[in-house]
Length: 620
Image 1 (cartoon, rainbow, N blue to C red):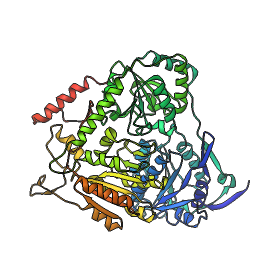
Image 2: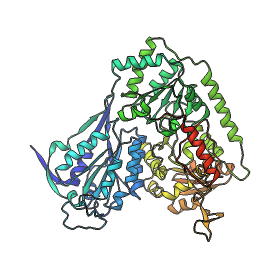
Image 3: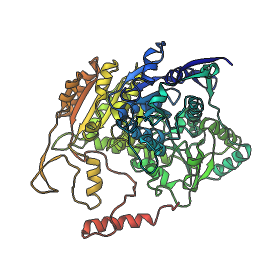
Image 4: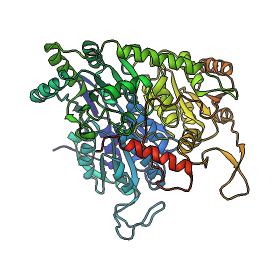
């Protein structure tokens, strides 16, 4: 056996550069490079290997915050349809811990993410070292054990030869569309620099094949029979439709059998919004037309969806007697809400199902109901846009202006606050692949970093990050990274001076306004005065070296948007909007944990309404 003597760090870089992925006969490189921040633990091990690795096609990007750099990697992998990734490396202790939130974000959204957090010494001889967490009852526990709860695969390389099985198992998970998510391989800082005689075949080109799992013939017949017996079916289009490249098959299914479709946050934009059967976003943040169709359905066909509480209205959005069928590669997801489980690839399953139903000459019993519902909804959106707030700008009118003003191939990125609901209801997607929402974990701080990842994945397309002021406070250092990497972003900050969607959730359930506005404190321990604390976000952007504009009127926003599109570097538009200036809820409900007992009548009344809703929802 031929061997090559090198350090663990050097072997890891060489291995990563030889990983490829193949689907439907198309092969491409899987690992584009590494994003990292060097520090105590990785700069002289993995960092030395990266610094001296001689391949210009294996990129390195320097981050500014470990959570943010890992979000860049997630945004990149999501925009690439899970067919390419960046790995991430950090120092030990706090550097590693910072990536845990991003790991959870990737896992919840079923996005492949690979982390190499540095760890304490495997020899234990210098212990306790700087930034080491010591657990007296179990000395093997380190900061990196925090990744166990949020990763689909976790390992620690305490000896050089362990690197091989650790890497192979991680890539087994990363390239499995049913099980993909975050994978963590902890690298003790001494082991990174240790040498070993690695077999040369470990460094050969390795192609990971993504197979398409079909529906079994027996299950297909049962599935076709259930659908053929329904009269008013509705399809839920989840993100799995996009990752399976199954949009064309879904369009064929809906058009052939006249079946309306509603979108999840991850599935939105896969089907052109103009299609008459595309009812738009459904669920808690959905529109009236989509939710009415779901409520009237006798069969709900969920395809590639996680069926979280937002699309199901906390399990109260479907008829109690409606049949639920879930087509999903992930068996865990396919069994949710006690549905009929079909574990299969979305593209393959839709093709098989369409053929089986076409042979039986089946069509739904709909006439023009869903076309009328959609027309009524579009009228409602137009009416809402015409509404004005005498105090200032409404978020709804700004977003509609933005929707008309962005380039046809522009990618928008959002994740948290009130924006995902506004976009889910009313944003019109011009082209597939341009609607990039992280709403599985709804991670505040993903927006700018995720947008940078999307821009790296699609350098020739304009990319917009949409976020609120509360989000901006959490994470904006990748403005600097975007300048460093020559990747222009247009960042639009909706400044309503508070966590206003949470403020609305609070006050609409009988709780007084508390801790959600950004106000100056008064002399009481829990008190705030009326004046809010103003922030010039455009100035912050200019401080980084980016461009910055401020808009207080729709005309100023239009001008700022045009200027931003002409700029050659990252540009931020600070839009001053009024609180609670978004679209209302339509035909939906969301279960929240409100106090069962309270001295306040408003809270007791809100709790009574929740209890009444709970009588109507499915119990699983």
